[in-house]
Amino acid sequence: MSGKREDYISWDEYFMGVAYLSALRSKDPNTQVGACIVSDDNKILSMGYNGFPRGCSDDEFPWGKEHEQDDPYQAKYFYATHSELNAILNYRGGSLEGSKLYVTLFPCNECAKAIIQSGIRTLIYGEDKYGDTAAVRASKRMLNAAGVRYYQYTKTGRKLQIIV
Ligand SMILES: O=c1[nH]c(=O)n([C@H]2C[C@H](O)[C@@H](COP(=O)(O)O)O2)cc1CO
Ligand SMILES: [Zn+2]
Picture 1: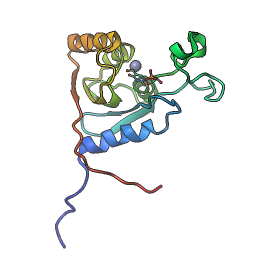
Picture 2 (picture 1 turned 45 degrees about the vertical axis):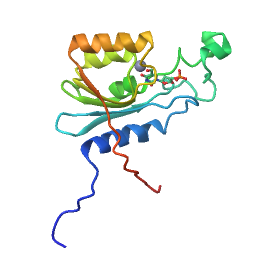
Picture 3 (picture 1 turned 135 degrees about the vertical axis):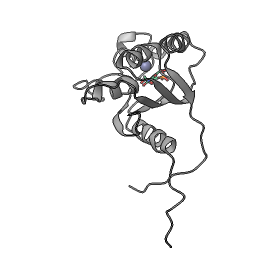
């Protein structure tokens, strides 16, 4: 046996896999989102998932949805930091100019602003379950205008198993 191993995972499977792995850290009972930022030469720069800011307890702040509670103060949306924003803010190494973002859910308009302004140039997303909302349509409008390239990750169907 002198040749290389052939069934190694691709770069896209690797980085999207890291994004999905990050999502598993989310405490959101409804939607778990993970993100992974990668340099143009395929080095992982940062990761994130949706959650409350530091100091805002997962056990004290609300995880419910606004329309269920009928009071935005008692719902998660005022407090949850989106996975993409967390990944951007978690990066302390300098510039993200020219980097790629792998994210399990298409970014909202607020994250699109942060993506554009931080210099991320390529976006690879998993699902687009809120694609028909105004927030995601506005997001695409800004990403298009700013020339951020985006495409949906095509699942290879490979099942990865890690025993931890
Ligand atoms: O881009 C996103 N990134 C992200 O992390 N999120 C988070 C915020 C919330 O915790 C959750 C959305 O909750 P829900 O699907 O129950 O409305 O996902 C939501 C979006 C919306 O597109
Ligand atoms: Zn967002």
